[in-house]
Amino acid sequence: MTDRRLPGEEGVVRERPEVGGGAATPSFRLPDGASPGLPDTPAPLVLGRQTFAWGERTYVMGVLNVTPDSFSGDGLLRGADPVQAALAQARAMVADGADILDVGGASSRPGHAPITAAAEIGRVVPVVRALAQALPGMPISVDTTSPAVAEAALAAGAHLLNDVWGVADDDALMRVAAQHGVPIVLMHNRDAARYRNLMAEVVADLWRALDRALDAGVPWEHLVIDPGFGFGKTPEHNFALLAGLDALRVLRRPLLLGTSRKSTLGKLLDLPPDQRVEVTAASTVLGVVAGADIVRVHDVAANVRAARVADAVRRGWRPAGWSTGSGT
Image 1 (cartoon, rainbow, N blue to C red):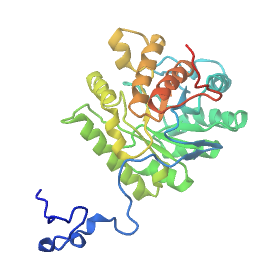
Image 2 (cartoon, one colour):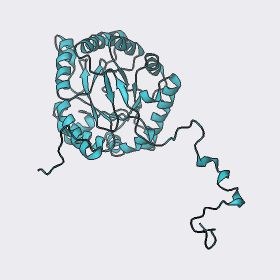
Image 3 (cartoon, rainbow, N blue to C red):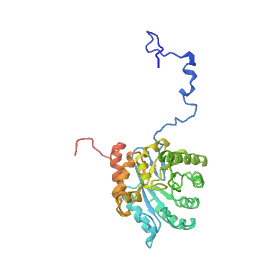
Image 4 (cartoon, rainbow, N blue to C red):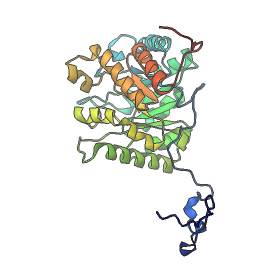
């Protein structure tokens, strides 16, 4: 670009009358009331009695599967008293550092047998109610695609909806979240793993879901996204998703990542679900470094430790009482 200043005019800013000067470009300033539209740290989110300050550290969501057929082998309906089993598991998870408990009563594994909303309510609501009474300060999420189940779980004490079909056209679950004033996780999913450009399509699908949720009345601050690792994607898609996870930061929403015990990780090293702790922890570290705000896991203690090391590097997190003095 040619410098149009004359000798002696160094430091003088001149208008360009041939194009109307700077005043001819109104986009130099945002319109009144407009958002900057740029990536930033999302506002804190209150769940129950807890405040989630995004960007300070990674939060850990412990999985409670109130099912007989969970892919991960931890279905709580296999025992005689699933409510007491859930309480015992929840207490252990809280002791290990879980920040949220995610209760699900319908399996989402491939080939699962569908159940009615009434049956799902019968599984989920007693557990949510027991957790809310026994652990009153603990945020509870309900993993469901059913508006009826969501309504019943919220009435029993849940604080967050987790929708594995958050990108579907049906906005019924979004409207439940709006009516009750609770946050919702919108997860990416597809019926078949067909993509021309994986990351671009995941971002686009999630953006459309966010837009639908806003239209349904859910506040922007109540929206969380999940890229859907293992849902509607091949193993190669899942690895590419994890490698490109930071692309989702353009959506400016807190990011939940659920890789725990997934078959993609098991397939890589030929490991059954109960031997996927280390590979899950490795994916947790990769996710945190890429900007994940919540990790959804079965093995809480190992993943809390992995996340804290990644947080120390990615976010500058340090434990209370940390000394900056020399040490080994």
